[in-house]
Image (cartoon, rainbow, N blue to C red):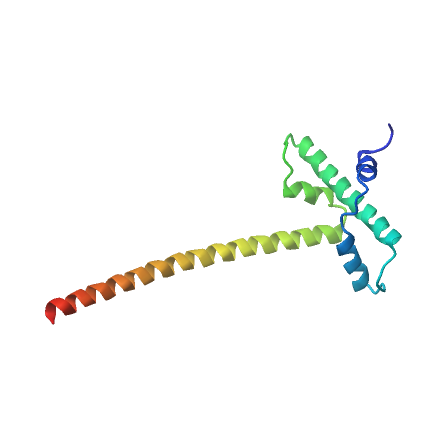
Length: 135
């Protein structure tokens, strides 16, 4: 019973989750195709256990904050000691904020454009009506 939750999760489900991604990663790093299945299985186990332990750490932090749901800040806390990961998370969050802001601005411009087109169409109809009455 001394086995951790991470170990139980990884031994309970022997499916390989990241085979395609790990194969592409190894190929990008210079490993010839095809890679040994044992290598893929070992890397898959490492990645899966890392993801599970990070999620458990984030959930534990959320629990200490008396929340049932995990937030992005909980994951930032879970990887706070890993500078590269934390930097990448901050970069991705900033990119997400920028895209949301740009998307919102684009939607507002689109709405204004629709209003402008409707106004021009109304003006065209008004001009046609005036031409018929004058002409």
